[in-house]
Image 1: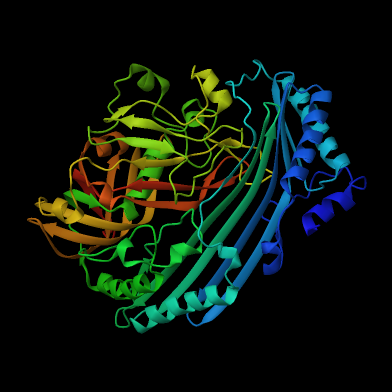
Image 2: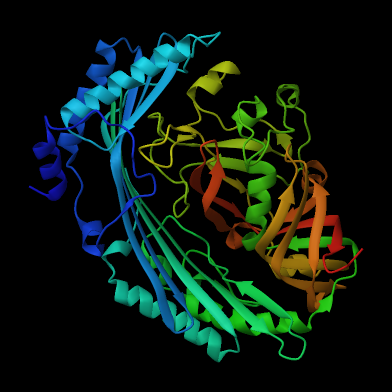
Length: 546
């Protein structure tokens, strides 16, 4: 019997009714604890049945439960020192019900039968209280039960099984490489996540999932001792839904022939750190940009963030309906634009898909937190708005036939709600690489890497900057620029897209920490694209003083 099964079985009958004090971010544990097996699937099913039966007996017309074990490991270094190693585990159950036509939710970290049954009863009681204030009952799109199924991130090497010493040595090697290449300061971090999630519902699904993610990142700083000015360059890594194999670079995953080496699939952290130190020094000497109109060539390491903010968030149906406004506002993509079937969101080159399937992406899972099997669908087709991202109750409101499977929670203690799937710009059909694109630009800027941004509360007017800027004149890169930010509105920007490179240049970017909701929840999401061209975009000089 492993530790988890022992804790469940010995706790039966002694659990209290206290449902608070749940460790949302996890409790510190030893590295060895991260390698222990969780509760076996048969026992999880028994626990789920206890909860579902308890909810029904109290009057729930629908119920689901999530048994979650969330494991995190962070290794943090600076120059020649390991600053911190953090190992956490968060473990418990969240229960959601519909009773009297209204939602109720409760969670507990006491996983004996009495405690989870009491949590189910509390969720039903909360739903009934909420129903006193609700004008219309919740209605869900139909969802078939899948029986007992499972899904696992396809990894080659479990990052939690790699000794911390090995991870720390890699990061210290990254720091050493950057310092030897001229950096004054460097810090590097490795984030590792394993989510062990079990979902069951009164629809008849019992779904066991094992999700892995990894994100290595560094920040290099170079100081000009004469002027006191400094510049930074952060890593060009992409957080990934992969195992530790992401940090085993292969030559075939590198893109050469550009101002800096770029990566797809696998990442050479030490090589990128050396380049970052050199380029941070080059940024100190780079020419400040002259404000004006430019044709922009945007690398996927930069464009992912523009996609996230200007396409991902405004196509969330809860923002469109006005149900959600925290962090990212509502959306200018109102229902009338979708219903017209001719709202020209972008040019004909703009085809944007939502998906939860792409291998290596942060958002890839088999099923969402409502038991909906994940899939891919069009959001923008040939430049026209054709769909949103939605969940079961929202989809019912606008007359969809099935949920798009976008319902997630960031822990067992959080109620699931609509979260962004991977949202990606499809590669162009015509063979084209970045240098083919650049050679046809008369006056332009090539931008690599993401940095600061701002966008208004309807996701319309925005400003973005990057890590590296290269001036293009008459089809050639002629030098580095600095102080660049571009400004546009979402519709004008995407309608200025005149070309997208082919699939051979397609890469993923993304973030572990997309915030939404109140109380705040975070979500991991990827955005893919190939290098793309946008004509006549307004560029600002960020160093100009008024």
